[in-house]
Image (cartoon, one colour):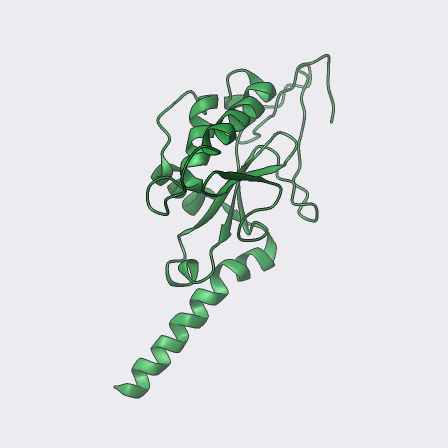
Length: 189
């Protein structure tokens, strides 16, 4: 990591021109170590995701890439996602967080502490809600109205698969299940 004093800046090259006079940090993901700095990560939930491929388990990563996820009632895991390693990620722009890196990490820590006192509810108060609270705490990108539907939508349409294996782990069970159902329907009809 390149630093200049204690100032960090993450450049989203799609949104900003690179100004080499500004101090910056370019963070990259490390798939082998499951490190995804400044990302939201997603993994399939066996059986549920096979039937509804857009439903899965979500976590949010600290500036150092450590994954935090609301894994069950009164428990927020650190670096051990409830349903296995991520298969998708959504890279967020550090430049859109008022307060920078420390605000990012503090927001995730505060949301995690809050969710350690929550009962997990599959439909209403779940891992997506934990991520939404983190984003609201950091006011990303200048807004505080994130909810579980909004973060699900962002991951569904803007998330990227983590390589070919991430794509296969996400979609292969659904495709297999639909193929079996189609074959059964065809032979019964």
